[in-house]
Image 1: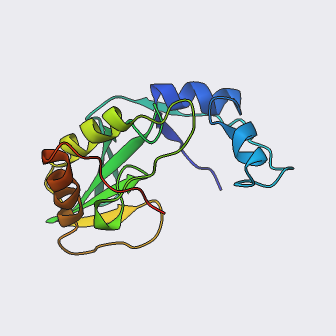
Image 2 (image 1 turned 60 degrees about the vertical axis):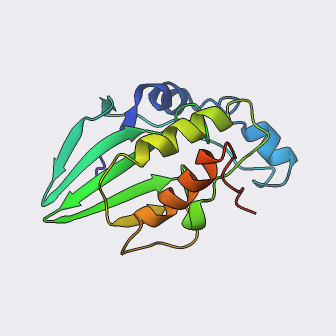
Image 3 (image 1 turned 90 degrees about the horizontal axis):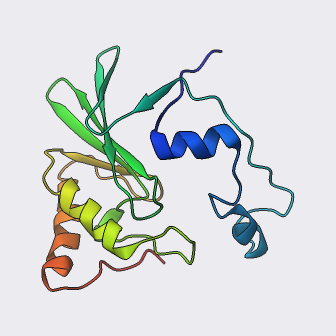
Length: 160
C-alpha cells in the first residue's frame, strides 16, 4: 500500500538521511531504550510542511504545528473533522500537563515551554498525545495545567 509521508523541514533532513545521531539513537541504545540491534532506516518524504500548512484528507483537515522542545524538529497536528478539533500532540504535552525531559542534545525546556504557550492559543477539544492516556473531551485542560506551572516560573512536571 502506498503511503504519503509529510514532515517539517528539520525532520525531513533527519528522516531522509536515516541520521541515527540526529535522533540520539546511539545513546538510546546504550541506555537500553532501544534494542542494541535496532536500525533507524531512511524514509522518503513526499511533502515538506511549513507552520500552519493544512492538508485535506477525506473529511479531515490537518494543520501542521511545529512544537520544538522534546526535540528541535518536533511537530504536532491540529485535526479538524466537522465541529470537532483534536490536537495530536506527539511528545509535546501529555495527560496532566506533563512533558518529557531527556538527556539528548536537542531536548530544550525553553522550547518546550514556548511550544506549550503556543498550543494554549489553539482551540481544540481532544488531546491525543504520543503515549499514555488520551482525553477525548476537554483535552485543553492539560495544556492549562502546564500553563499554571509556567505562570509561576516553573517547568511542567516530567513524565516518569
